[in-house]
Image 1: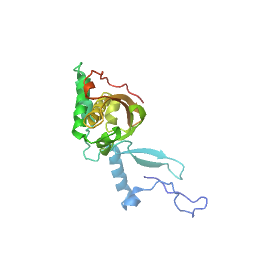
Image 2: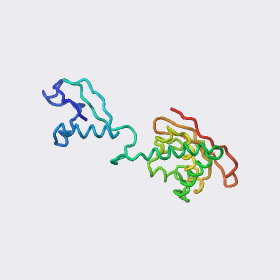
Image 3: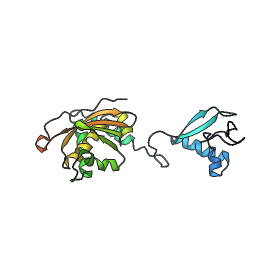
Image 4: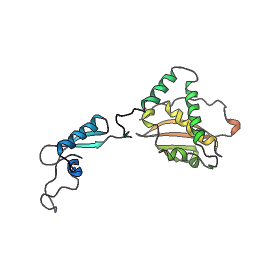
Length: 218
């Protein structure tokens, strides 16, 4: 972080930096400040860093650089993979009846491709998505809380993607020893979402549960 050094106070030696003082990346990298500033501003332009002014130190308020919240794609030029599912889902919904079912079917296919047939619990069945970065907590009554949704950024803009996610979970369950249909319950927090598993057996599959996109929640 780019900022000013601290001055002595309390028991610290005079001139020693405060423990919470911002560190200048030029000093850390042993390069000139102007070179560091140029690279930092470039990272801001590319969307990797954000800036704010930090007060409470002598002199001009420090300009502090922080990593952008959420996932950061390390590529140059930046690739916007997140726009692809957003555009495809939005256009697919224009097809009307059957669009949401088709989106869930795509999720089912993904889940089926990742499934492990020996899983004997919901938590175990969801492990393939956990290994990709998802964080799932299974509670009583079939409640599933996802603290880190793999599709969070797209879901916020296009909520029907939650139906795709539900399909992926259901595909994992269907191809394990655990059977259940999955209902999307919408967003939870900045990066999470929630689902409910309704236990079924193979004879219940295709019984016609309505597939609807969940309402967006903050």
